[in-house]
Length: 118
Image (spheres, rainbow, N blue to C red):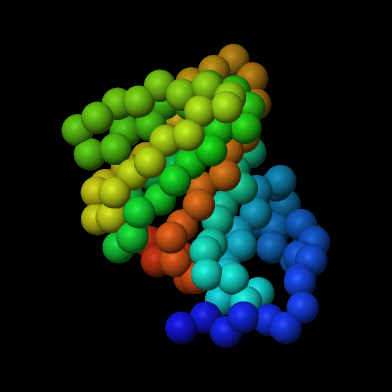
């Protein structure tokens, strides 16, 4: 069970930044939240590796064009679209547009649990 903080918490991007890029990894357990997320900022051709989680994941496309492969399904999404993936189903995404692609991958878990398949 995730302990709820007594006060709202601000988490600055620098505290959860991935490497030197603009991506971020937020794990709810570290901040009193019951969910986690990745903020992804990819250039054309970039994306995730094939992997799965033991809980559902929801992606919100903020900018650009992205192709998701979720199990046997291929889903083409653009800014404003929301895509869902069930627990235990292998998935990946790739920026298939001509410019930057930004999305948030929301994990239905206070900690990110990921099994890479690539």
